[in-house]
Length: 210
Image (cartoon, rainbow, N blue to C red; front, side, top):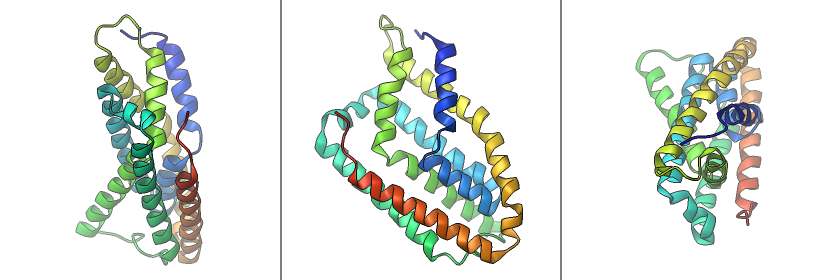
């Protein structure tokens, strides 16, 4: 059913460590709010990858590849969401969410999870990536391509966890001193906000791959 799995895992590691919007999001959360928040953000991204995996398995991602209208709608929604996050960070004072306890902390983690989930899910280029990347490791003769898609998607997410969780811990350790100074936290939020605004604008101006 599957083929070239060693090559798949090697390629997945390289793809996971390549900086992008997802890494920027959970990395900034780990620096500004600690390991747990960064991990929750990362799990939200993983949940988004799961959506793209099932979409590829069911053929829904092919619609984005063949329909300019569908790609445009998803692209603009995703860009608007990234801009919304970015503007929110630019307006943040740096204190919100740094000292949490009880129910407030739990609510914040739900919000962080959903932000990671939507940041990944609403990016049509991630959907097209899964549609283009996963079939290279599926035996053309396999009778159940949908199951093969799901299996590879789960393996990709597992590989991401093995690769990224130590990196999230590293980001969190770097942020310990940052979180002790609200002025640094403010500028960190503004820097991350500017990054998300830039990524949102870039996504909005991007074209559907031929």
